[in-house]
Every structure is written in structure tokens, then in C-alpha cells.
Length: 314
Image 1 (cartoon, rainbow, N blue to C red):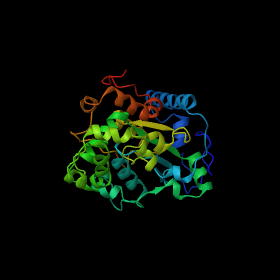
Image 2: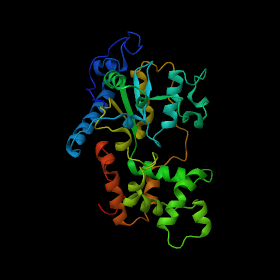
Image 3: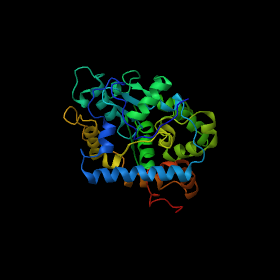
Image 4: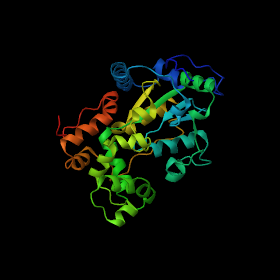
């Protein structure tokens, strides 16, 4: 349905309701606005991504609107953001709510409650537009995505969804199924509640082919490759969780809004680190580590993450 054009075509000024100032995309590719060291880093990331797409994906298929459910649109500033759960997406949604006016009078992203940032309908996604509107935006808007070391993201998702007592919806929806399928002789209470899933059981669930045959992965553990289609959509900026503040500031600078809104500084002392991920993987056998790596391999390759040193199958 939608054919994707190259990222560096000029903006059709006025056609998207934008002022005739320079668009974020022009700012990026004209490149006199932002320090060159940062530009070089981002160009390097784009090149790694393109090269990996060439090497590891066979046939390019055509994008369909279904592929674009995770791409949030800011028509005022010419931005497309593909959100990836567990990679600061709550704060990016808050920032975009401020920028698009969806936050009402709020100018401080942190004043927006987290649950409000995830309400469907507060922000528009690209899948809601017509084919011609989709193509025009893919051609002329700045497209960005934020990624994270795949196993840290996975451990973060596990900790958030399976070890917090308040996430009863996840325990019911996924935990009960995991206990039923991947635990020998489960207690009736565990089958009923699904609130004590171990990381090991979660890994068994992920690598079990029946899981994906039955339904797509939940977005919190779905691969970035499958959520954001980085080989079909040419992202102009690939931000990384490891350099979140710097990369977020870069995007806001390109959009010309760094004086209107700032990306919230992370205050989380509990955030998942590589050392933490290593502890979780300690009990996973090399056989299952390898299976899990193969499942997330494209995310490692596309975004230039090396195989973690703590894995035993290396």
C-alpha cells in the first residue's frame, strides 16, 4: 500500500500545515545547526543500520498501515517517532503531548501522569492516515526511534511486568499461561494468579515456537525490528537508551523546540543495567541463551550491540 521514499527528499512546504521555516529533516541534512561530532555519530548509526538491512534481510516488502501503529505523528513540527516500550517511551510520549498540544496547558512533560501518556487517542499514529498522507509524511518528516541493548530491555520488561505486584493484568493475561505451560506441577494458586513467573520460565515462553504461532509477542518484549520496521522505514535518527539525554536533546534541537520543552532527566535508581541483566541470565543454560539470542539477533545486528560478555555460548 505505501511505498517508502528516501529520507532526504525536500519537504513539500505548506502541504502539511507547516510554516515555511526549515523542517527538522532539512536541518538534519543541511547540517549547519548541530555540532559535527554528534552528526557523525548519528550518520554512523544510520550506516550500520543500512548495511545490516542489506546483509540480513532478503526481500523488501511493502509497508502496510498495520506496520505503522507504533509511529506517532507530530504534524506541527514534522516529526515521526516510533515508540519502543522499555526505552523511555513514556517520557517521549509526554514530550510529544506537550509539543502537539495534547497535554493542554502542561509545559512540563513530567506533570503528565504516566498512564495518561499511554491513553490511545491522545497522540495520532501514522496508521490512521491515508496512503498518500502516509507517504508524504514518510518523505518529509524527521523519523526517529530509540533503541536499547536487547537483553537489558528484555530484563527490564520482565522486572516491570512480572515482579511488580500491581501488574495483575499481565499476571492474568501472560503469567497464568506461562505457569501452565512451562512449570512442572504448578500450585493451583499459581495457575490462578500467574504472579510468580521466574525469569527462566519467561525465557522458555519466549523461545517456545508455539508462543508466536498463537499470537504476536506483546509490545513490551516484541523485537524493535518487528515494531518499527527499520529496514522499511529509513530512520533519520536512531537514539540509544545508553545516550538518552544527549540523543533526545539532539532530536529536540533538530525540531527547533529545545527552548519550548526539555526531555526529562532520568531519576530512576532502579533502572535495569547490564550487570543486572547478567545476574538474570546466570541461571539460563547456554542452550536457551543461544535460542534467545537468535530470537533477538536482528536487534543486536541492526543497532550495533555486541553479544553480551556474560553469555555462555560465545
